[in-house]
Image (tube, rainbow over the protein chains, first blue to last red):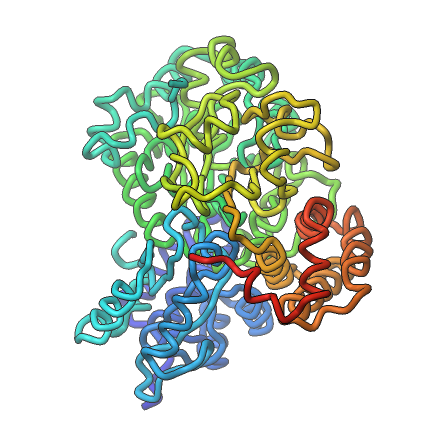
Length: 179
Length: 439
């Protein structure tokens, strides 16, 4: 089901608008925002085809895209589930039980941290501090923060995301509602 | 109750909208600065206020502003550091989410002072929903003539944009942030030149934290001298503290500088005491990078004086018995906490976040994580504590940016104050389960 790696007219107009935020000749500044859009549009990860496409849009070398994409933790260089569950594991979240959250998720979904469910629905990932220490333990799905987690809350979340309409949760991370 | 001037309106319904924000006196500093003050006069007020950078370093803001080079015909930039990634810190998120216009107002007033025609708010990618809130606030400001050409009918024109990052603690370091904003990997630059001379796109640039920029509004409104009367000594004004860990009321609190640490932890106005009536064991007072202190040293200095929430009091005693105010990321640990395991989460964090440019940091953080991992797994070796000490010493001061120091200090302080716990982990691996926190 390889889909053609190409933005539609609407997204291209958005990209143009983004590039205008920077002085002339400094359009490379738009790279990270555009990679977010590309990741959201093309199945939640950045394939080399997707990165090459972004390079062609910005008229930069593909290596300039690869080196950036591989540096930042939010860019997935491998396919992930439709619902990427990112559990914070740093100090405050750890002290308030993040390891129990991960264990519960693993048991519930029948996978280990770093794995994706067979139906391609969920991936569990542990991440470093998400700046939500006051709501520890917490996890992020797409653009949404879920705080003060309990086993019951985690169960409800999984059901919620499993139900139709909320599946492609990482597309929360597109820009179209803000510009 | 201390003075509140930054987030005093946070509970007002609709304060995130321009209309309600203005009804409560919002954008007064833009009116005042643009219509009645010269840019230099604004800089002067900020100098008089004694405001110090709220991101963690505590450098005097007015002085930082006065370093900005102003060659004719060259653009100057203001860049807001909203990359908030220091573990334990979530105050900027709170401010931007609840009162986004407080930051936008500060961006306009500060840009006027610095002569910046364009400014960027660089926000960490994970805060995407907050970026949306800021974009909406900026749109409202443009529609009201507070951004764009000839703001409020004056000669001053300004554009402000939000830039999202994509997950990298290092981009909170100002030159790494600028690299990232230019569409590159977040590798810190060698200084000099400092951003004030050659920053964004090689142009003179000021990078300030969210809270610092928001504080410019009350400073302009009340005047630098009045602002300097708030707080204690060289710790002027108020500070947002992110409180988390084993406390009854985690959250963001605006304190007047000088509140005793004991009051901050136990008073119902702030943290509300330790959960389940347990005892206090230790505190990381200013974000993960600052030295952890045991209960007796965080509540009182070595001299027996009550420790206060100020830059000076928290650092009293140096690193031997003191710590730092840092970013105000205040993490509280109760008596059940394993300091060793907690340190392991920090070491893992710094290893993950090292940009890899400098060998001492790239290799050293990896070694520290690895050694701590084997200790918490019950495979620690007799020489491991000394080895950890040696590694952190060799990282500190030997890297381009402060991430190396930030990775070294938590290790040094945990060993300094809790050495016996490390020894127990190594001596009695079968008892490690008993050292784990009970949540």
